[in-house]
Image 1 (tube, rainbow, N blue to C red):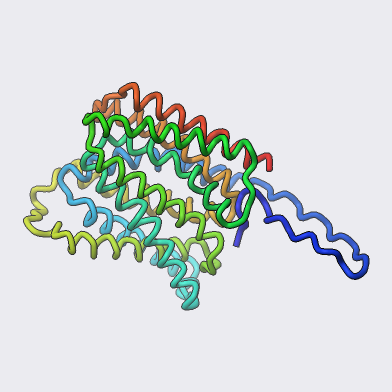
Image 2: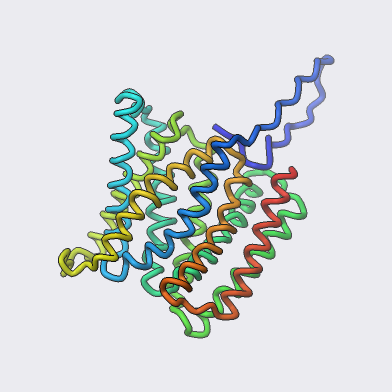
Length: 323
């Protein structure tokens, strides 16, 4: 498992009974081309998924669409793993399976599912900007775990939370539904807890296997919640628009199978602070696509709040990478 981006936790300074030779410092982790390629996928593809989600929920219920998306993607990924590496690559211990299920429920059912529900009432660009606050929550979680964030990180958190406050103004003023805004805020908390926990739980050693189990678990949770909410009542597959089908296929193949797998791999292969940089690239992509494709308005609270949040995230990430 990887440590968090700030590096190893400070060790206790206890007096040793006898002198010992200091252990050599661990070499800095090298950021490989594969890491940058995976980041590029997460940057661009995830930025476009907010638009895809918004188009899907035009004619498909939120949790049923989210659940179907991730169950399909997870099963496809499991089949690819079994084909390329053999069925043994899917074997995990009970503890690893339980950890993958927990992380999948946090990331997919909680984090993604609530965003899908929120996008039935708020613009895709606003949802993406609200989600950009995730690195601020991660800093707070690391602080709660005993790490000491630097002044830059603390400043970034405060800046991010201030931007989050500005972004809620459209909901408070009635321009969008405040319930949708609050749903995304809760989603960011659950996604942050899932991302933070994945590096500290006994996950499957193969990140692709972990990703497959996470997607299937989170997707099944979404389907169950959709059925509990009665989303299947009156659902007519023939009434689903062609563009919703295309958007759902895009989300399955690119947003889930490709980008989520890249993200799961990055959580184990790269510093969390570097992985978190997606949070200030995705909103830019999402806002531009929302404006160009769906004519979503870019109001001053969204523009100002988004700029403040992205500035806070930049400060958090730059501080973490120097640490």
